[in-house]
Image (tube, rainbow, N blue to C red; front, side, top):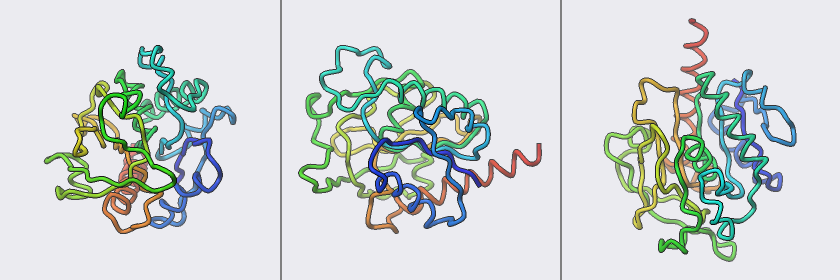
Length: 237
């Protein structure tokens, strides 16, 4: 099993967190780092699943709000363009996709959705880590959603390391978890049976220390399960 994972352009330990998280469930997964500096979007044709990682903000010009640039940090148009290319290729190949934090946001933008450039400025609670202290809050999975099937309907507690969030959902998406202040914390396809697996989450499961938390363990396990199903389906064609 080969999983493509986008370069988060962070220190190595932050990238390695994703690998460790997945390897807890399936130690023999092979990873392929995808990044604009590597110029390797063609590798998408050789992967079985795709993880869109966290990192800097999506440039607001990609969701037609260029005037919001003062509210953003660490924008990288080359990364944005590269990852949109990767997403397009993955959808064409019907590859299961898991988007995490920025990964959720770039997928939403690719599908024509918009982002809240800065939550606090927009009147929401602060969802970012402050002074190195991890922020946590509750999320409530939406009844009947894929996320509910993965983690259950009970309120869950997740980490919160973001100052942007989904505003208007992109084409074909529906919210599947909401925070107490109304921020969309997860999204998925409306018509799941007609599309390859997709789960978008705003939290960072790869950083959470409570590794048996369903929003950590079960998300990884279900993603890998869907990748296995996809591999088997393609083998029968």
